[in-house]
Structure formats: structure tokens, C-alpha cells
Length: 492
Image 1: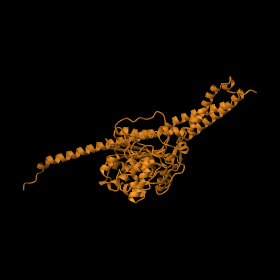
Image 2 (image 1 turned 180 degrees about the horizontal axis):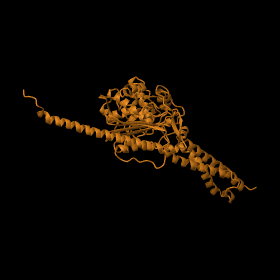
Image 3 (image 1 turned 90 degrees about the vertical axis):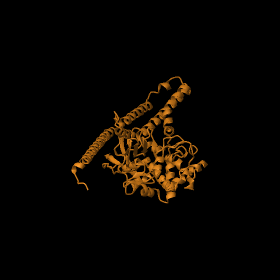
Image 4 (image 1 turned 90 degrees about the horizontal axis):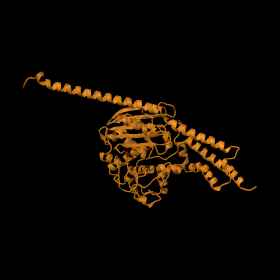
């Protein structure tokens, strides 16, 4: 045996030391870059919040299989500081969890995606015979033919309280297209899927999610409920979220709504960071394959037909990123996966639906930072635009009141009577009330969603009240002028 000599091992030792030094430098650079990125995100969020009416939010960012950044900002509805463990209603982000529950049963051979729903739920019936052909895949891809215009579930004053009641309510549903022909975003598609999970697994839907998804992912601040009223009960109660009045947040409780399967999960950003990791790791979490890579690809891909950008609980953007938002009347959420860069972002807000609050701009700005771009910041706060609209409407109210109580008759009424000219005048005065009555129909025409007046009011309480006042006052002016015109026209 030859003798040991340090000289013979010196080259290897030098290479090993060099390798460790190189790895240390690379690791230090990576940590420094991550810290710099986190600081930029933190600074951006603070600047955005300063220009926003949103009272609070929480954010988490993951990179591959690691948490990069998580933080809470602002206050809850009870004025307590928001943390990374604060529960929020995640609204339609829940749909991807329902999709994964289905795919777990697909992996175990208990569900065939292309089988009709009635194979698993024989009691599934709608008002349209074509519904018998609806498949599990079509429900997941939102191509079942069901839509808000055929089943306006958001407009129902009486909401179901159980999954069976919700399923029975679909007896009134009419398909707007044949199954598989068009994409229509419709919450009851995912309600039905929750029923399918229960029927196949013989477990309550909430229990199935807890056992097969939440627990394996260590999502200890996450649970599922069937109705919005249950958000405020149990071991993980939510604080009240917020609507916006005159650009200011007002804490109220979420209105009654059956949401299981479509929007029933409450969670925290710490928990959702684990959820993002399993999405980025092709269904794997902590060396365990939670759901098969093939099922993950199916969920994160768009259907071949019909053409749409919706996979299963995820929208695919034009640059192949995965995105979904969630919106209630007092809470909202944004979630984005940058597939090429392998980043996942989630933001949860305790403010709800309002056209003057741009929640998407928050996640877009964070994505810009992660892609080494400069995020855009608003010049004016979002409440400025709400205040401007309110000022204009209040001015119109004042002018209309002035017209209504003027002692001098209008110039129209003083002129030689002309039925056509006065008819046009009356039409202009009655136009505000016509438009006000058509508000629900206009919303449906623009968004495809059907809302009742209660939900429209919560979306824009101050503006709806002021628009109503403008409409009623103009109608009163029209009536007063019509009386004067009639007296002028009829001989004494």
C-alpha cells in the first residue's frame, strides 16, 4: 500500500475549497437578490396602499419550492393588524381547489372526466333535457352550457343553505348553449362539482378538502364553508370585510350567498404559499406526489374545443401564465403564477367589488418587479375618481332641485305649444329614470353576470343612491312641466 501524502491530495482539496467558495458566492448573490426583490415589493405595496381605498391586504410570493416573501398590511374590520396568518375569504380562488379534489378522484380511478354528471349524481336535473349530456370535464372547463342568463343564482333573494338544496334549485336552470359549445363563467358549475366529490368519496365536501388537500399541505388556517354566513362562525372566523362609500371603506358582513365549491374557502397567505408551491412543483409537495403530473397538466391547460382561456380553476394568459381572481362584496383576491420564471404570487384584500378599486394592478406591479421591470404607480388615489363622480351627481341633484322649485315656468312651457318639441323635452327628462331602471340589464350586457338590486347597491352604494335621486327628481320635473304644458295648451 502506498503511503499517504497531503501533496497527492492537494489538487483535490483546492478544487473542493474552490467549489465551496463558488457555491457560497452564488448562494450569497441569490440571497441578496431575493432580499432586494422583497424590499422592492414591500416598497411598492406600501406606495400602492397609500393611493388606494383598500384598508388592508396580505401577500405571499414563492419561487419554485421556497417562500420568498410574505407580509400583512393595514387593519381588519375590527381594527387589528393584518398578519400573514390572518384569514381572508379567497372567493373564486376556491375553484382550483375544487378542481384538484376532482382530479384526485380521477387519479384514483373513481371519476372519468368525460362521463356525464348524472352517472355520479342521478338526481342532477335541470329544466333543459340537453343537461343530461353535461360531462365532468365541461363543468371544470365552464363549457357546460349553464350561465348566469339561464340561471341567475346571484339574483335569487332566497339562497340555498345546503349542497342538496343548491342541487335541487338547478331544476330551474336553462342552458344557454348546448354542452361543450361555448365558455360561460358560472359559479354553479363548481357547485355541482362539489356535489360530485361528495357523491363519489362519500365524504362531506369540506371534510374531503381538509383531509386530502389542506392537511397534506399544512394549510392550518384554511377551511371550507357552504354559505357566506358560515365565514363568521367556527374556529377560523373572518372579520367583516369592506364596501366603499365616497371612496372610504365601510366594514359590513358579506351578504347571504351559497358558495360551496365555487367560492367557499377562507385562508391565509402563509397557507396559500404552500398551495402555490404544489402548483409550481407539478403536484409534488415535500417529496410526496399529492396529485399526478398528468392531472396537473390537465388543470393548467385550456380545452381543445371550444376556444377559451379557461383551464380548470385557472385562466391561462396569452404569455402562458396562470391567473385567477376572486371577488365578493367585501373581500377579494388575486393569484398569479409566472410559469417561465417559476414565481407564484397571491394577494388577499379585505375590500370587495367596486369599479374604482383596481385590485389587479397590485399583482401586476409585483409581477413586473419579479420580471425585473418597473411597476407603474397611479398618479391619483383611486378614491379621487369616486369623489369626482359623486360631486358631479350631487351637482346634478342640486340643479334638478333648483329646476323643480323654480317659480318661473320653463322657457319650453312659455312658448307656443308644440307636442313634438315638448315630447322630446319629456324624453330627455325621463331618460335618467329609464337608464336607472335598466342598470341591471346593462350590467348583464357588459359582464354577462346577473345581479339583483341589493348586490348592485353594495357595489356602488353612494352612486346608486345619487343616480336614483337624479332619476326621481328629473321625473318630478317632467311631471311638473307636463302639468304646466297641459294648462297652457287647454283653452280656458
